[in-house]
Structure formats: C-alpha cells, structure tokens
Image (cartoon, rainbow, N blue to C red; front, side, top):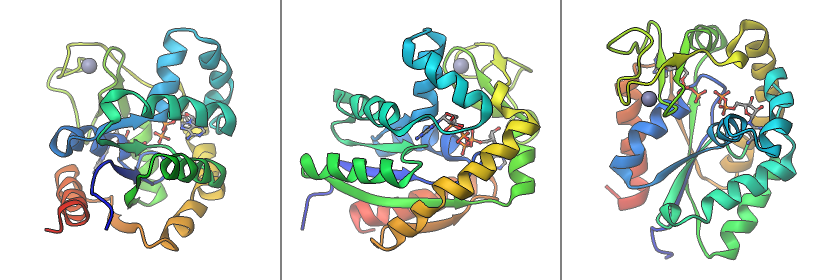
Length: 225
Ligand code: ADP
Ligand code: ADP
Ligand code: ZN
C-alpha cells in the first residue's frame, strides 16, 4: 500500500461546472494547494509574460493552449514547496497528452492520483453560470451575479478587489469552450474511469451540497472514512 500523501486530485468538468469554486473552498480544509491552469495563464497575461501573450490568442477564441507550454507551466507550479503534500488540479489535464505527461511526472516522483471527481452539469445551466460569472481582479476569487453574489456589488468579499467579467465568458466564446470540452477533454473521463479513479458528482446542486459530496468522496479515499 502506497502512502496517502502526496495526494493529487483532478477535478474534471465542463467550463462552469464549479471546479474553481469547489477547489478554492476545499484547499484549506484538505491542506492541498489548488493549482488552476486557467488562473496561471491569467496571471501570465496580467504580468504580460511571453507565455501570457501566446496563451491570450487561444483563450480569447476558447481554444486550448498548446500542450507543450501548458504541461511545463503546470509542472513548474507543482514543483513548488506548497505542493509538497499534493494538489487539487483544476483545469489540468485537459487533453490525453496532458494526462499522460502528468502520469509520467507523478510516476517519476513515486506518487499517484488519489481521485478524479467528475462534476456533471447540463449545458443550459453552464451557459447561465458562465455568462453571470464575475472574478476578482486582485485575488481571482469567483462569484456569480445571481447564484453566488458578493456582499457588495462588484466588490470582492475576500480582499475588496474589483470584480470583472472574463472576456472569454461571452456567449459566443462559451459555446466554443463547451464544444472543445466535449471533443478534447471529456475523453479523459474514460481514461481515468478505466483506472478506477473517477467519482461522479451532480454539479447542478447548490454549492454547499456539492462541497459536502466532494468532501465525503475525497475523505473516503484519503482516510478511509
Ligand atoms: P473554465 O472556467 O472553462 O474551466 P479556465 O479558467 O480553466 O476555464 O481556462 C480558461 C482558458 O485557459 C481555457 O479556455 C483555455 O484556453 C486555457 N486553458 C486552461 N487550462 C488549460 C489546459 N489544461 N490546456 C490548455 N488550455 C488551457
Ligand atoms: P469552473 O471553474 O468549472 O469553470 P466556476 O467554479 O468558475 O467553474 O463556476 C462557474 C460559475 O458558476 C461561477 O460564477 C460560480 O460562482 C457559479 N457556480 C459554481 N458552482 C455553482 C453551483 N453549484 N450552483 C450555482 N452556481 C455555481
Ligand atoms: Zn479578491
């Protein structure tokens, strides 16, 4: 029996399924760092790095950023000390090539994936979620104008930062992102199902209900309770 830590969780689900919201809520509780590839790209964009500029052209169209740069960006992030106990991967891997690169990396360090929670939500609900999503410009916290509003309109509860709407959350780009998810990312469900790592969670439930379902499933694999 291998040891429980480092523990890696991979949150899979279409854009808007609640991966980021849930990962942010669970990271402290589980002591596992949230690693969001989308947030890493947006940080690079904000800092106007070369990677950020490259990623922007893909993000704006709702396409995936090429595997090579994406894999090395996430691998670098996972080497940092705050990931020593493991991580919640949110938005990575998104292609089979990324998944096999991750397998190689984890095998190299003698660790493994503990669980792959799959959040299911139907397309109409996803569109309503994404078009009403607001994000803090300062800390990246996520809100929804109706389903998860901040206490003060357009102001982040956590840090007081200004909330904005991501340009790729427009209806047109959202439609393409859903298409890209079903075509390129959903095959990962089969990949991890075959390894007996998936657990399916109804992501259309209220945020708190989804949180509890995720926590129960994760605690069971990590601590057998
Ligand atoms: P979502 O809310 O759709 O889950 P993210 O914030 O995770 O969005 O990602 C935003 C965009 O960043 C994606 O549409 C894609 O262009 C890029 N991106 C994020 N993660 C990856 C990845 N693992 N591989 C390729 N591109 C990615
Ligand atoms: P993802 O990271 O999977 O793209 P997010 O966590 O950013 O998704 O959530 C997308 C939008 O839906 C956000 O505006 C968020 O506040 C909202 N949201 C997240 N979970 C729920 C839920 N269970 N019910 C209603 N709205 C939700
Ligand atoms: Zn904030």
